[in-house]
Length: 120
Ligand SMILES: [Zn+2]
Image 1: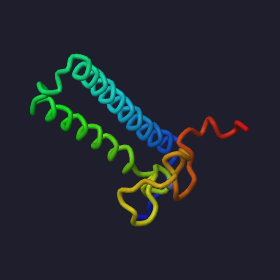
Image 2 (image 1 turned 180 degrees about the vertical axis):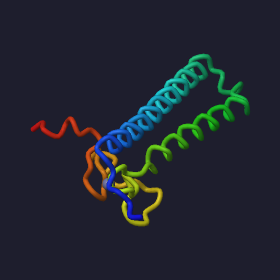
Image 3 (image 1 turned 45 degrees about the horizontal axis):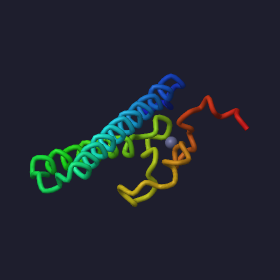
């Protein structure tokens, strides 16, 4: 049996999934950045750099791993229309192409936010 082309609903759902992954990534990245900044400011203003222990660094490293996993999940998602990696073209894994900023599939030009299509 040949693969049926995806319906509009399936494409919409796929795009929604990609948007959710990006939102999760930005949320985690922002939280990590804020916590890191507060922690750094606290350490600097109090002159506590000497008290920054291994557990703090481990916590920071752990958070950055979580953010990186979220990044990979967002960057490795597949296009709901053509089935290719939405942001990655060719073998340049896992380096994203400009598709990340263009907000569309690098293979079939499917836009991440179709409702913005008609805007000038
Ligand atoms: Zn595509």
